[in-house]
Length: 155
Image 1 (cartoon, one colour):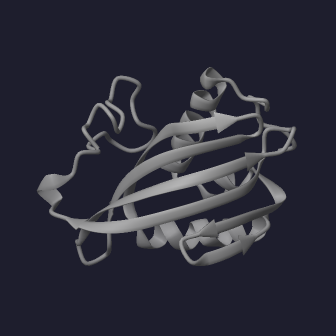
Image 2 (tube, helix red, strand yellow):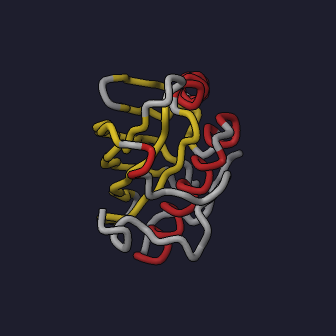
Image 3 (cartoon, helix red, strand yellow):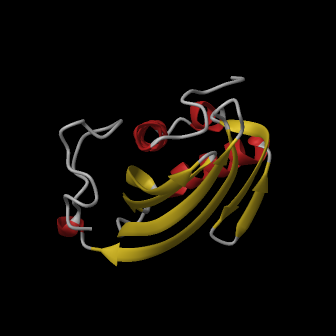
């Protein structure tokens, strides 16, 4: 993939579109497809891990979804300008022992002129929850269009 619209400079509408596209892709949990949204030399900070390049991103995503089972994510645009978007997000998952978590985070994104993400800075905290406290209850794949977002869920 050499480009991924919408392209910068972003408007509120295109920033929201870009965030929803990212959310949908991550909810698909296909590391290969997700990795293609980043430049070949994309630079990440994910928690305390520093990742450089699409191949490292691919390995990271495979590890992530092998550990974070039944992963479901919601993203919400916080701010945007020209070639950057800031989002807040939460995702729910469980480990192989049946312990459930809601992970809360913020990401800062920077895009190339081709719409691929060239930089991602993510700060994330995991909060243990009971299975009965889960709020992200749709089936597999992307969040349905009529399923509430973070603000509507009171998160």
